[in-house]
Image (cartoon, rainbow, N blue to C red; front, side):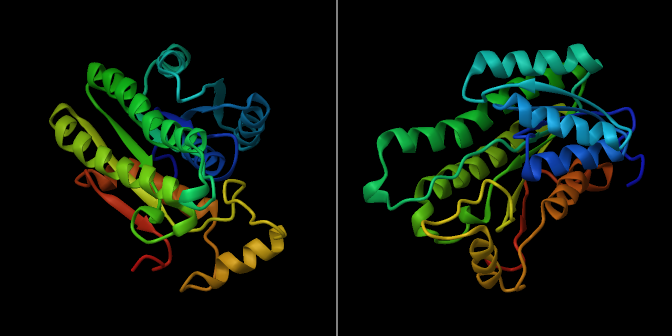
Length: 252
């Protein structure tokens, strides 16, 4: 897909690390101008530096996706910087581990407000802009935890299952207006979001995650990024309302 996104503008939330950073870099490598958003300005600037090192174009816009005002401003800043919003990868999310009976209401609210309400707010304002411009592509990051039992991740699983329902509903509603919407459901990927369990070293975590995978390996952020780019490309032009599971058969 070399040069496939030349002249396109891509917005990536949760762009300060992991899958978000890898996706931003991949879009830039293939010609897109990229806006990366997230809560931590320093992390976003590191992503921008990675894009610039590849000869790409990128800007950072700090944004808390739980705030509608900040989301509205993010979309406006994207259009102000590059003149359009063609592609959005709604990747911002949090994962808190804990038994449902020990989970606090505040922890529940943090997961749901970020993963579900944040995705809703992003889609709302992205669609408003894309519809005005004649179309666009949205990819939402869900999780294979929406497809399988993961007891310590009840809130996370619930939020991501809801993201899939939201994706399907929005795809049906807005495809006639030129906005194509899909989701991905990654399995374990060794990124900072995947929490280390109490007493577990990062090396222990990597071994545990690999052992839980039928493939015997942990997915990479770059592999997920390439999946996002395919869904965002014209090659996937007839794919809408779909959830593409990328987990090495874990949820099969």
